[in-house]
Amino acid sequence: MARESANTPPRRLPKLRGVFSPTLTAFHSDGRINLEGTKKFVRFLLNGGVHGLAPLGSGGEPFTLTMDERKRVLDAIVEETAGKVPIYAGVCEFNTSAAIDLGLHARSLGCDGLMVLPPYYLKPPKRDVLNFFRQVREKVGLPVMVYDVPSTTYFEITPAEIKMLMDEDVLHAVKWSHAEVSRIYDTRYLCGDDFTVFVGNDLIAFGGLAVGADGWISGLPMMVPDLAVKLFDLIGKQDLAAARDLWYRLLPLVHLEFSGQNGDWDPHIIAVVREVATLRGVPVGPSRAPFTPVKPAVREELTKILKNLGAL
Image 1 (cartoon, one colour):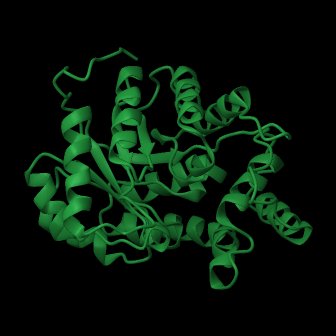
Image 2 (cartoon, helix red, strand yellow):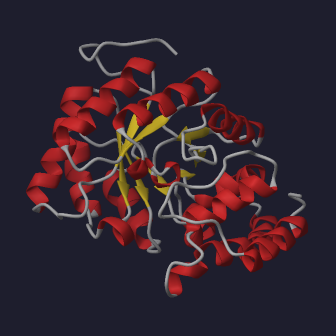
């Protein structure tokens, strides 16, 4: 990928479509980042046929990484991808300056855009959050996808606000990471066909794609990328009977992935995804503390599900 300066005019890219997978950050057993393991996970995704990557989102556990580590992980992912698919680098920062710093690094590597989380935890006023996106866009210049995940940020951005920022050339795509399908078609209605809408929650992946989402970014593409791509293609070809059959085969994995959200977050989604990678022969290692691996019973259930899907 070509390198750019911050002053280079932003590129106008074709509309994004397809399955964009998050990426796991691999770790050694002592907690050090494992760049080779991270590259192997990227190869696993590319071999599965994904149409793009969204590294350093929640699945990459950026909150456990220093800024230097985030940059090194992104370096490794860009190197391994070698321009084969677009990359929208995750920017999950509360601090505006840090978000711009990481965004500029992504731009220098030739990333195609940014997937930007709203400032989290302290819950700034809405005007400050909207200005956060404006400042990142102005200083970095890359296209911006807003990463809306209120279950963890406890912050909502509305389709109308997205339309406002789209009109200002601040936002160019959205990843809706909650279980409201209406957000997808409301955004399509308000923003038109040129604005890219991703379904970002596996619970509504089938419905979201069926009502017009342009693509899919979530956990299933990390675990069974080839089947996620197949589902996307079937819905795109309007072969809904075959798509439904595949969706019902995938549902046990979706239900297990989200089972912890009904109580104490055990198993956690990230722990499930990591275990699947391990079972499928990709050496991503354990998460950094405080996360712990899934329990043996969950591992056994995942093994059974993956075998039924033909993924083991």
